[in-house]
Image (cartoon, rainbow, N blue to C red):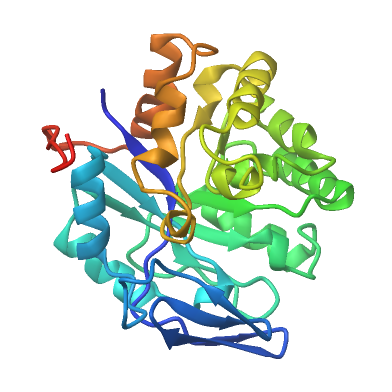
Length: 294
């Protein structure tokens, strides 16, 4: 089975200011996050560097062939690093540029095939004429838009109108529509449009209180598939933050072990859909390596 992670993060240094709050590493995987010390990375990542090489080791161990690297304003802009990652590992990573709708110039960055827009952090309307023009330019150039939305009916309605304005823009909606929120199915239904998909990055975080093997998460995947079709859904891990609580393999094997999805549905969700949507080719064959405890 080809497994592709449709929602992950990489950074050389997490050091930025968001809404007046400084976010920065504190060592041992910890970071200052909106005034609170948080375990941002697994504690063995001592220097705060979330590198492609460490991720590749996790990917090889978990037999994940490829990964889509999105961006978030809380990590700071990593465009330069991600272009280098794409150059060095073209068969393993598909990287996205970052655009902060509130603070960045809305121009198309060179060298990227996709742009991540953290819509849930934006105060600006998605229907602002300058924002719409930016998305239309992305559509014209054949770029993919990766966007997380707030669990907010108004922003979802804006996105629905934007999809009508840009019918040929390929869009991946993140965090499985903020699946534990009130309006998540409204986000999922956006995928009824031909070029809109939904990825599950962060679903284990959103169901963290339930924890592994996340039966409610699987039930939500089943419900979404019944609504828009399994061919519109993709697995994502939200690496590395989610592996503070679980291993990387655990972020998808709860799906493999579920009897709510057929074998064909699991294959599509865990990699087949992302392979087609993002255009992955030459994924490696990754053998299973036994643990010492086996």
